[in-house]
Length: 395
Image 1: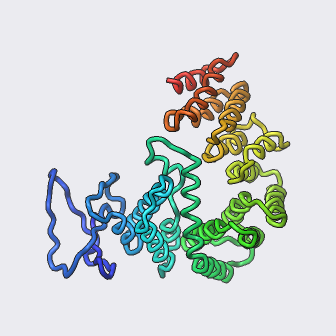
Image 2: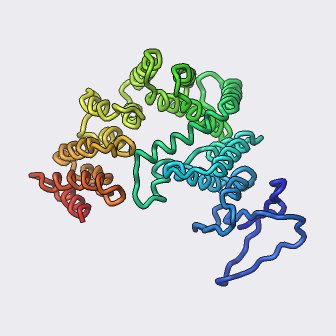
Image 3: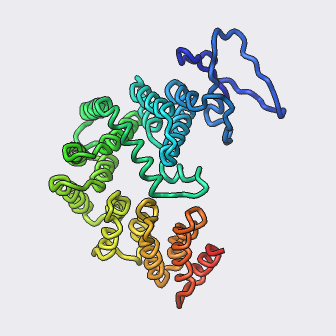
């Protein structure tokens, strides 16, 4: 499925057409076009393939499609390529002013879109996750990748802070006016509004270099946390608050939100799992120590698979901190795996998934991960499930 966009106005000059590719090489002609056009291909996710570009300015093409394409998936994918390219450039110290300009331009145009499809707008503004970015790397440096992605997000947020805040406030006002008491609107439009506002909150909270900026971010997130009735909005606000540190007032709001969330759970297992997970994923320098403290919490138990995954497995996906160069994250995980293996071999074998990926990382990190795998293999006793996974992972 292919459509054509005018390269000057961005308007669609040829609506979506299905082209049947039955030969190795084919030519398709579109008569009656007045100027240069840019194709939007594989619309509606019509073929599950990856395309290799051949134009002289791929970054410019991605930026154009990210801003103007009428196909939601293609707009999202173009933005993801644009962000990924610039983040990896940043990580490698190869930033180009042109790439940065394209990223800023695409973000600005997408933010300014006059659309009721808030979900598509949110997806188009969101940067690719660290795990997605890592898929494009032969050797993954989680700390450098985290720093680069965070730096790009912060640069975007700083440049467009006023515009982002205005859109955030606009959505908050719309949501407030359409709400009816404690009832949560579950129509697609309302869901999209929440998704977009929560994404914008994430950008706004990334501006946190000065005490004043940290205070503003903390107040904004806490206001959303306290004023929201739905889990989506409260959890989004809490996810930002748990990574805030510094001034006493900022820490006080973070700790207060965590306590409120815990108290409001009233012992509900699913909500408590979220409470543990949000802390395991916090972007704080002492997050491992916090996770170790939570292991001793009265509501935590290794005998409950879901509770175990909510904290231990969640921390292992907090890549920048789990993969710290001292290897403490690996040791902590292997210690927990050893304990769980005595209770539930199936869970312990699945928890080892991060350690057996050692080949994806540097020799230094890989050696530390293999060291923990060997320690587990040599453990007596060890379940057959865990021994099989560990032995295979060492090959």
